[in-house]
Amino acid sequence: MEVTYIGHACFLIKLSTGYSICFDPYASGSVPGLSDIAVTADSVNCSHKHADHYGYEEVLSPDEPYSGELPEIEYIQSFHDEVQGAKRGTNTITIVNSLSDNAKIVHMGDIGCDLTSDQLARLKGCDLLMIPVGGFYTIDSKKAFEITSLIDPKVVIPMHFRGRSFGYDVISGREEFVDLIKARADRAVVDAGSHIEALPVEKTLLLMDPLRNL
Image 1 (cartoon, rainbow, N blue to C red):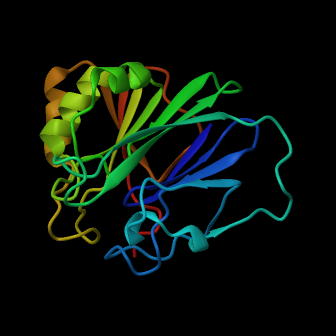
Image 2 (spheres, rainbow, N blue to C red):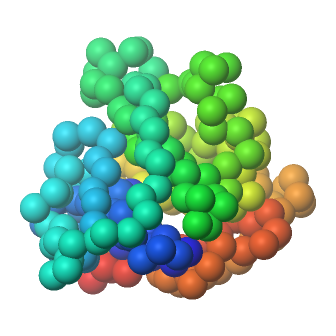
């Protein structure tokens, strides 16, 4: 399974079957410091309809339609804020179960609230967790660390953060989240660039950099 971090909350994941999924593509010009996503995928999953997560038109379809085994995809409805959507609406968490990779993949979208015990039970022990850490529009690093600890994924990738040359001014970087993970000393911390060919075998905090950083 290959994982490419396009930037912001956008990932392109290619399963071992060749099936590719783009999560939360951002519209052109919607995220400071990030260029157009320019990716091709068999399917697109968007957590909500804000421009920085809903750039359907930016994703190209493959020249040859996919005809193999399909992953099982589930959705959990949640909120974009801590007041049941009153400020920013709803948010969809996407779960992809790939039998070919023996992997459960979770993209948290713009989660802005605590999770119920039932929701946590559905996510617990996943193989890959992509979770926002920047705060303001989403949960912050401390809440992301708390949720990550409860889910206890094999691999966690922080997303929706501000870097030196990209991201919204009102959100924070990922440094606090990284420090909190390191303090627990129960998982490896790996700088992986923008693309990996396979998930790490051991419990890992995977630090990925945007592929589309200007």
